[in-house]
Length: 199
Image (cartoon, rainbow, N blue to C red):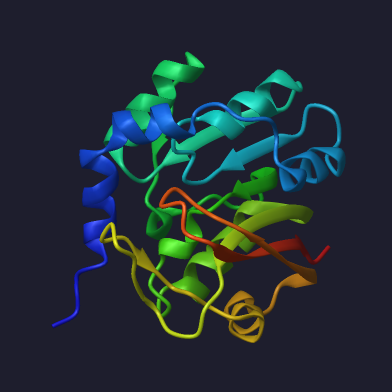
């Protein structure tokens, strides 16, 4: 019997304080630095799955107008405490904005979306950014969806699978592969996807 992907949200709810403490402090990643460099001053950015609020804090410190969100209420509360601003509870399935943001930042969060649901979520993100808007997301590479040792679901897609999932509506999709690790400290092949909505 397959585990319920809802177990992922249960994990983050149960471990929100520890997760926030363990992931709350680090220098901006190479990907976040490049993302910020591609934005206009004061750009309006939606962060999906903000977790501890670390990346939103960096974006805010650089003068961007950030809307931080997370799908787990307990994680949203942790981020709000860190940032000192409200953090909305926004499950990926409820993204409904239309041409509202200059960019969307989704670091290591959409990798938890079930494969069957990912194309719909990505199309919702496409609608949420303005024409020529920027979108970054990162995924753990793999061949078959499954769960890690912590009980978290991952869609584990390869480059071809990701391009198919993104579908239409984008003027460009760039995928960069890097080696690293994650919260579980297990060696991981990461796929970093940067896309722009068609103008």
